[in-house]
Length: 177
Image (cartoon, rainbow, N blue to C red):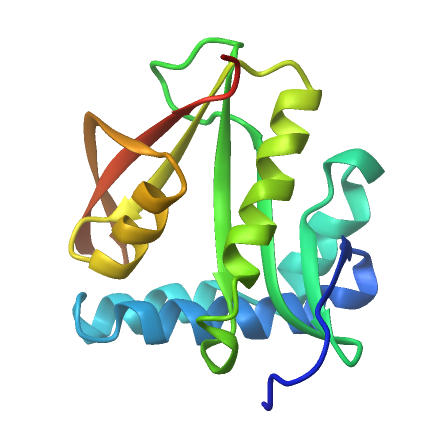
C-alpha cells in the first residue's frame, strides 16, 4: 500500500470497517512480530475481522466513533477511545483503546495526529485522565507514548489470547492542567 499524498482525518463509518480491520491486523502484526509468540500473533489476528469492526461502527454514537486517517480514500490509520475499562478506574478516567497506522505509513506523524484527536474527544467528554496499554517489549510504542506526554503509572497486566500470555504496561496522561 503506497502512502503518498495528503492525509485526511475524519470519523469512521461502517463503510470503513474493512480498512480499519486491515490496518489493525497489519499494524499489530508488524509492531509485535519479534515481541510475542507466533501463536499470540495468530490469535490476535484471527480476532480482528471486518464484521466485528462493522458491528462496532454501526452502534457507536457519532461523536464517539473512532477517527480514521485516509490517503486517497484508503484507511491508513485509526484511533479509538472512550471510558476506561480498568477495574481501578473511576468515571473521570478515559482510555485510548487503539492507535494503529499501516506499516507503510509509519513515520509520517499520522499516529500522533490520530492520538491528538482521541485525546480531544476524551477531554470534550469530561475525562480528566486517560490510560493507554502497551505491550511491554514494544519499545517503539513506548517511545511514541512517552514522546506524546504519557508516563508509566505502575499498572501491569497479562493479556491472554488462546492460552498465550503477553505482559502489558499501562501509561497515563493528565487531560486537565
